[in-house]
Length: 147
Image (cartoon, rainbow, N blue to C red):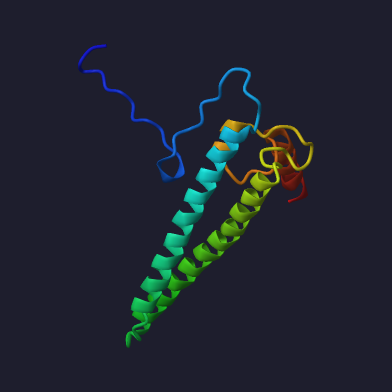
């Protein structure tokens, strides 16, 4: 390899966790895979909780009553957007807890509609996925047709 060629940076997931390398003939959702996804979900939850904490502190620090109506309106809009984001994250935290429960009950990684394996790569991209790609695609097509 020429000295000028650069190595691509190693890909990492939440919390610096490296992607899982499946071994040939390895059983799906074995102990190692479940531990891998448990670590991802815990790291993601920790990151979200840190963000919530930062938001609370920022909102406490920004409780100034601005005399200028434009400044006050801008602050209220910013807080509203921040609270909406935190609400989405609250729902995501609930979903993460549900996925951790599924890991404990050995139900994690299987489609809730058809029961087929969701797949390691899909779960790494979206650790809270509850459907295989086929069922999710069909759901999205149905949603578009109803809209």
